[in-house]
Length: 106
Image (cartoon, rainbow, N blue to C red; front, side, top):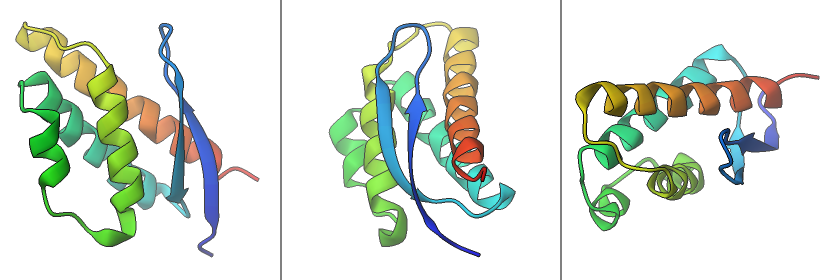
C-alpha cells in the first residue's frame, strides 16, 4: 500500500536536518532514492555546478524529493581525493536510505 510520508533525513556530523516529502512503500522505493542520492552526490563531488544538476530533466513524481536531495548534497563539503569523494557519495546514499526505511516503519 502506497502512502504519503513526510520524513526528516537527519544528516550526521553537525549537518542540519532535511525534511523530505516522499512516497515510501517498500525496499525498492528506498533503493531508488538511495541510487538517486548517489548520483547527485557524485555530481557534486565531481564539481558539476548545482544549477546544471537542477536543470536536468527528471520524473515529475519525484521532483520535490530530487530538489531537496540536490540542495542537501550541495550543502555538504566537496572533497578532492577519489576515496573521499566515493565515501561521501556512499555515506549520503546510506543516510537517504536509512531515512526512507525509518519513514516506512509503523
